[in-house]
Figure 1 (cartoon, helix red, strand yellow):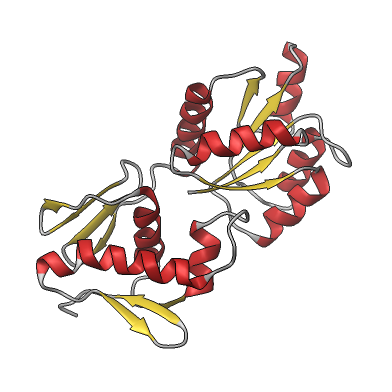
Figure 2: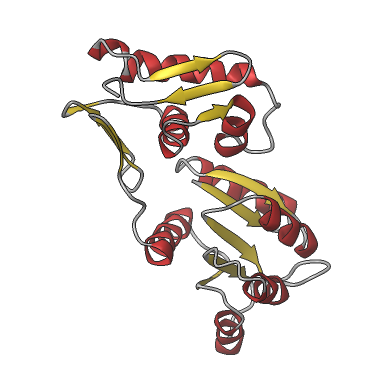
Length: 224
């Protein structure tokens, strides 16, 4: 799942980014309020982790503007301030949860996952023929047999299954699965799609993921 992290302290932002990536989140990072609003307008995120004290626009104003424009993305607000009025104001401006610094990554990830469950309900199980992917438990199976995928393989397959029957460009997969720290190299997508094929198609003697030359890939039920 893709997360937007808004944190002006760059060392803290990098530490949080790495912590979230270790739990299979894809993370985009910006460092000020105006950039947060621009990123949220351009990209759909599963959740936003929003620091309170930001240059330009503070977290309260960013959150309020998101809600004013109809953006219902779950927001977890972070702050070093300790006071019930600050927490109340964060919730009143539209934040869904509030976490004080310092915090453990275990708690941050647990809060995020709880937020995602509450915000839009548990993500639906994806099914294409006998191929089943459960984003909530991050498990995959085909014909009732478990398929062991690495975190990035899982994300690539999820991207394709959410658009089953459609052609998904390699650049779209890059945008959805890899954060902005990675070079924009579509060869990375080709490597991971090949790895996914070896796990979800080859052992079952089927062909589900098709290459659309010069564009990207299309996933469809092999019985269709």
